[in-house]
Length: 114
Length: 114
Image 1 (cartoon, rainbow over the protein chains, first blue to last red):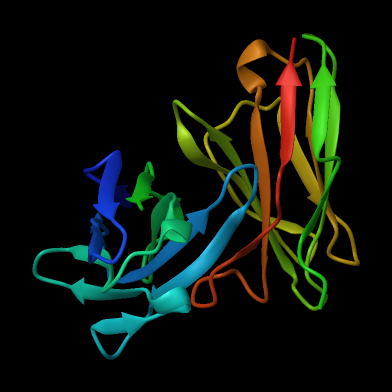
Image 2: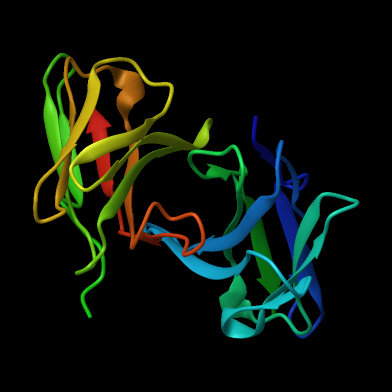
């Protein structure tokens, strides 16, 4: 079975500071991993994905994520947070070998304080 | 290129009624998936269609159904509405079954059951 955990409901960071939003996953096979962002009353927007290859993935708006197979993690990072990054962030996994649909984490609300 | 279009944006229905939601995917996308988003349960997978065939189904009662047309547009129907069906319903499209490309989400339909 596939599952995703985002251990923090809320992350607060000061503008200009680095941010990290954590994600751990569980799959039977090999994972496809994604990050999405959701702004109020909107659908989810794709940020980045890990399919294969380099463990460090760069995505939209300066975000990046590192795939760590041994720790089954895929944490989202940004070197310098902006107030406009404040939103709800979702990690998602799909089992490359056994999965049939994406499973999303519960979401982490990021607040960037000016 | 137009995005994923969901109609209507907002809907208020009475308990016991039925409702139909519509989703027009990005041109060329043949896969459409539906998710229910609520504050308590997060994002839950409803079903996925590809080329008019239901590929996967989540763990929802039979009151929830869907279909996909030859032009890839999709509808989902909920019969005998319950108060707990109040949610944001998100449609997502992809070129294939989304395994590597990820999804493009619509802005959702906010359903309120009173």
